[in-house]
Length: 396
Image 1 (spheres, rainbow, N blue to C red):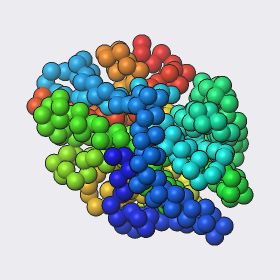
Image 2 (image 1 turned 90 degrees about the horizontal axis):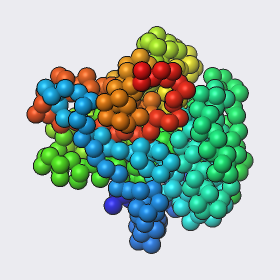
Image 3 (image 1 turned 90 degrees about the vertical axis):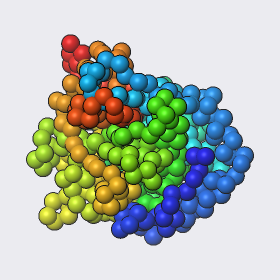
Image 4 (image 1 turned 30 degrees about the vertical axis):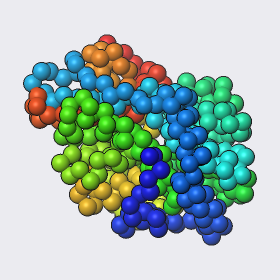
């Protein structure tokens, strides 16, 4: 079910995007990872164990909830795919648990991870605790300050949280540091990448593990509406929740796919994290994709109220979906995300992650243009407990 290989991605390419742009020393580790993934993808025992944990530990399937008061009666019907109800509070555990089990199969007894909003760090620490593995999580010190609750949660789960003080002190620098450590420790350590980014086979692995979101959502919306939705909406930083939702609908060309990036404080350089909307192709963290870079190819600074979207690149499959016209990508700014955060909290009793609030903001606007006979599905990728300090008076 969730192990279906990505069409055309066996060589790690999505059109011109993806691939491996890494030091030679990491090629054996990536080859070993690809071979291990290929093996467990067809191993009934591995699939059964993961499926059981997704059901009894993560809490899958997550429900598809129809909102009633989020938009007016003349707007499209909006359904939320409730990934915020997963154990740990986001979709991140789907991937972290699968990769941790894979690491065990490969004989790796230690995990390292990077995190921005902290949800992937919490998920990695959770999977490590469940399987009895030590875990180190790199996190930019700026993100640690604004996501302090998740730092506490990681430490309670036994993970070592390492602050990264270089550059903007956010997700890009945390990823840089995790890669540096992995280069010297890959023989006994698995690098648990949290989004659909990085060198092959990571985008394929993450997409496959997160495809459970789309598989469930497709069946659920068919049951609820008797037809497929008119559109899907998901926030995009690296893009794991979005590619997970999109995956079950890519061949359904009547279903519009929309990824929502962080418009931040404006679309001037350094004030946003809209990698597809405002970027151009390049190479970052081992793969080719759309990046925010200057004329000399140097990675530019980013900004977003949502730490999980504050990244200057995007997954290679999203870059390809954009270029072939199968998916659309746009940006939503900090103020609109705050307003959607407040609206969903007050009108539906659901406090969303600020990352997810970007998708909700666009869905509310889109629903008003479509009218009451249309149906939209939004991936509510996480809950907003972690963000209450970033939205002072957020629901007043």
